[in-house]
Length: 286
Image 1 (tube, helix red, strand yellow):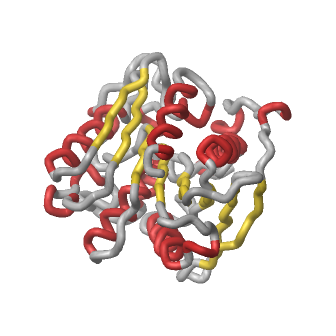
Image 2 (spheres, rainbow, N blue to C red):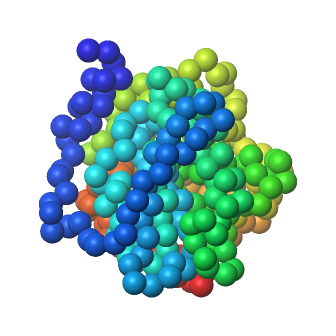
């Protein structure tokens, strides 16, 4: 068994199953998104039932850049569509190590651009708000799409929400502080970083967004950052938030107590408070 398969199997063995009574009813469909690389990726759409959607959310799941999309990702997006009355696009982007950087970022950036250009295909709302949500590795990819948009002078999102994002892949995990109960070990963090980085050198802000300059961040969309007190990624996420503040971006940061990495989607710790805060921020746009 290769190293990536073993990593995924170990991850799946620690997941709690979603019970049948937790699946809420809403309209769902699946599309195949064609990538410029010639490959395809799945796009899962969750639309509010009985009422027209008020806008679009694009969700990039957590994965360590390695783990497969799972039921917890689906359940989060179903709940969000119902709570906000937004259509939620849940993107199953390419995974490392089979497809290292920049495959996932390229795919996510292509999707964001496509949705912005074909908004009415997914939602009839006017105005046309686009919200990007990224969990863990997905938060890294959200930031990467916006850095590219700013650099290329393209439209940015109306709101960015990052939950326990992985934003520093340059610092050696052995040099970081791992809080009690942290679910990502230094060895696992190094494996994630190695798988995603591939042969790319250090110093790239698309891989480690904490390295982005103030000039590169000017114009970054309003951002919400949620971290967990028992997560080693909290300091780097909060450091990135400080960088955004220096670039005059509106930023709200909250560290949730008694919570581990992945809590918002894994339904542990302060997940309900985190989810409620996300819903409130989205509702405030309308």
